[in-house]
Image 1 (cartoon, rainbow, N blue to C red):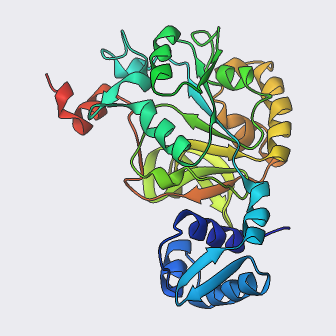
Image 2 (image 1 turned 60 degrees about the vertical axis):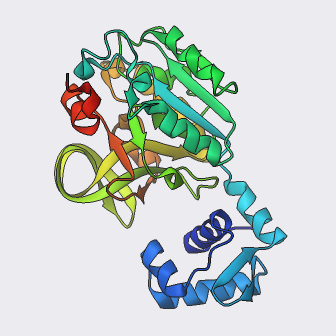
Image 3 (image 1 turned 30 degrees about the vertical axis):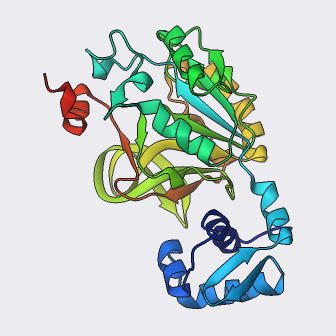
Length: 302
């Protein structure tokens, strides 16, 4: 029941857009492959009886198609939300950064709504700074579970990863300071472990170097790279390795000062083949500073 990456992406697109028609040209453009590759893969999926086509350019998954997708289902979402957000002062003096409102909606809610829309009900938030304030989310999201990070103010966000290191299998891990504008970034299924990134000519922020879609280096600033966004997915195999590697890096000299992303993308990168999952400009926005917040939401210009 193994799917190729392209078979997987086509099935996911059909499943998520059940009432839409797709020309092969449109699929090729969306999935960044040739029309010929789309044509061949569609024929293969029809032969395997994973999809059916009752009218031109409209496809439906068969029961067998759903069965083949099931091993790739995302089962959990873990939110990193323990930090102070010092660059967002003064608004973070009394409110955790993920709970700050942007255009009338809490930052973290843009992510939570997308997670629920994808059918993911197992949701954990790692909290620390003013942690009790996150209880307000239970009114709208009663399924949320909380994990406390007791040393959030003594260590970098690797400390949040450490307290959930045994919970990462088939799970999204999301930084909670991202404003999500395209909910389709969060999907019901994922093919393999990945980080989201946006292709850019130049950036002075965290970014990936890649080769054949695999992340080969993470760094601050670069040219012809993928700008990094803190939304990742971890399959069962990589999650089990991460459980060990997070612990070893955390307990190593200087380990508590690491970002959790550095475990798989720097310190232990030879243990993994993490793919970059492309996103487009405007799909997701990271608000790092109070000035950036004011630019996005004029209500803070007082």
